[in-house]
Image (cartoon, rainbow, N blue to C red):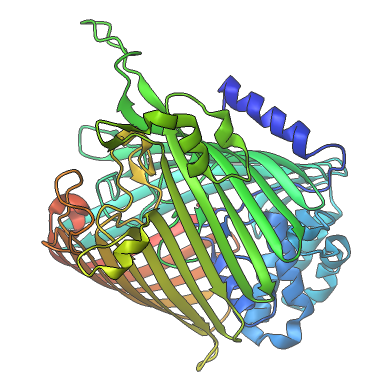
Length: 576
């Protein structure tokens, strides 16, 4: 964030796109371990609200408006759903009167939020206390556990974050502890800001750039006993207008509809600084454009010093730009298309233009130098698409497609394939059993997909893939059942089968190599879990996992080697 080039770019965008008519601001809610995202998906499938879920995280104002829409349509909800809407709305009193615009659903947020105190009187004194935060300049809340300062000009929330997770199985035991906190708020109605800091310690690493796990990627510091620790901060500052917003962030954006890791932009890579432009000029179209500043981990020998005793290692600079257009031809159907470009060393202003077909710009910039010695030296460009349909009540169907290289002739050859990843899935809510949801997903990623000849242009940050956690030459099938018998209690059961082949980039023929041949990763997992939400930002969990693994042991944590029966428990304060 201290990069002067990044700051200057932010200022230029701010002056061009924002102007004088400021009406909006963005404070993003973390996605991991946040039950409100699951609730919004359920409400949208039941046609109680409408959302475009292709890009996450959502802003707090967006979430507040959608929960208020659900509250107004309470006659469409069962008792558990209505109780959950009221329960989570306790955390959004600050968003009263903010963002009455297209970005957040054209809701009259002020009048609706001020009605919360009346509508939730039957939920007891805790609800009345939460609603009263609108009237008192400063307060300490028990739900959510936080301190809040609320004035006409300045709004501030300070909330702690603590957590612990313990696992035990045939291989031994594992302990994770975390601590930190978050600060967020608004300056008048124009500026939104948030900072989220988390320090994490694990008795052994559950994730690294080589492992194929769903854990969030971390840049670890290693201790002598084999344990690791990491401190990560996320944050942002933003402003906007009636049909858009613009901000400078350090976070983990997720692009693509999926329950079990998107194949477009999964959020698996460590957080990184980026600038983002978000536009919604009409109800039927939405647009995102981001430019990010990444960690390549590729040594730049021309800038490094290797003198004995005074070594100084510099790494190649790495950047990427991407955009995503969503068209909504009719209510409930979202069709999104986009493209991205990864490049290194020299910052290219041509890629900064938000409405861009990046590969075309790349070919223009490279010219005759695009191929050297028969090897493509262009920057690494990609295409992607996502389709989500909630036209049938109770059902959400989605398809995600990520294309690295596409040639039409290969579709007609049985021994060749294109370099692409596709994921299809559906979630069924409240049918045939009330309060039950069923999800099924299938993933197929061809050999060579997500790979790149130039390692500094890889579709990754800090060596963690931006795409699906399995990376290339892999397939997966996933089933998930969630039953919520009462408010705040979440019972889950899931089955996952994933396989990855032995394809080696620059050695095997990426066009003809069969999918998942000579398995190096073969894992099946059955998982049962219970989660109880004590307050909106405090939860406890218990669970059991049976895991069968065969393949190269480097791909999974040591505690999961072989066949394991793992029991675990956890407690978490804060949405991290």
